Length: 226
Ligand SMILES: C[S@@+](CC[C@H](N)C(=O)[O-])C[C@H]1O[C@@H](n2cnc3c(N)ncnc32)[C@H](O)[C@@H]1O
Image (cartoon, rainbow, N blue to C red):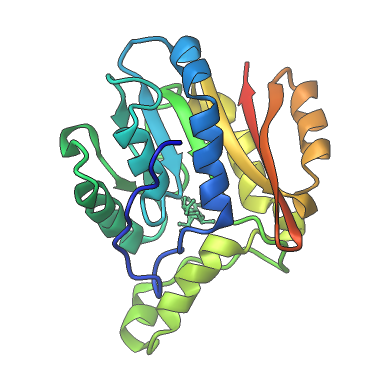
């Protein structure tokens, strides 16, 4: 079993690694040989969308997933996640030369068709709506409200908990390299089987990699590629 990275992070501002995070580590560990074969030895571009504490990207860097030539471009909408990503990678003695965290919405500022391996543990909890991004004003006058808003953004996924995930899935063609692959986490309330059917109709190959009961929640990870 590959070691879980140590994390240094302020959990008042950044999502704390939880069952979903650990399930993603297990899925990537399980598929590491598959990924090596599937993506080959070339310089792969790896992007974890919503990297939070940086645990998942650090795990991939530390264990050379998908290969030793990979470059890592984790993203998050939360500025504090950028700081945590760098701290976590440094705490685990990862090579910072191959890491470039970028604050952005999804992967929208990356050149299209570039990502070989995309990983996303999204805000998947069903909610009335997806919270709005905290403003500068809230950070000055909000007395801690800004921190709570970042944590809400990490969790709440709107209708069926799928609003953010669908945005990603609808953009997969644009984000992924022609032979790229994406690993995405779902909870049962996201109705992953219906998602898979819809994606298959658009000619995506979809496969369950891992699932686990976590309390009253059932989490699963699917991989998607052309
Ligand atoms: C469930 S947390 C997962 C964090 C981390 N990847 C993990 O597994 O522990 C979701 C993350 O997605 C980020 N996020 C939410 N909406 C986003 C968006 N539109 N673009 C980029 N990141 C986003 C949140 O800030 C949060 O860090």
